[in-house]
Structures are given as structure tokens and as C-alpha cells.
Image (cartoon, rainbow, N blue to C red):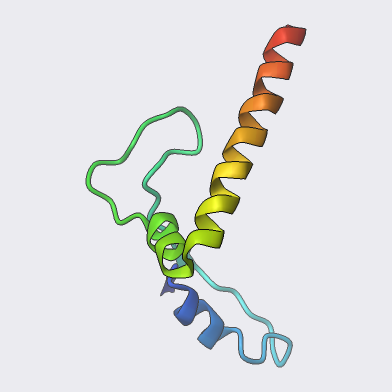
Length: 79
């Protein structure tokens, strides 16, 4: 039973094939998977990690959002 901190996950996966392993990773999500809701004042790991990685990560995020918006528009036009 661990947090969704990448450092914690990596620590528990040092030798994942040595024995059977089940990790219960407690995640906190700012945005819901379904819908556009936000669960209050929740820690934004995605935003924090993106800031730590710098401009390249921010640019990838923008490109991905633009791509997904285009795909979504195409799908809506088909309906």
C-alpha cells in the first residue's frame, strides 16, 4: 500500500520478478477520468512533474492537447 509518488513506486519495483507482487498504489487525481470535474484542492502531480522537467515537457503537453482536440473534433463531426 504505497503513494503514487514515482520515487516510492520505483523503490518497490527494484526486483519485481523475485516473488509475486501486488502494489496498491493510492492515487490522487486533480481531474476526474469521466467528465471535466476537479476534486477540490488536490495535489497536481502532473503539473508539478511537468514544471520539474521544464520547457520540453510543457511543449509536449501543448502538442498533445492540440492533437487530442483535433481528434476529438473529427470524431464529433462523424456523429
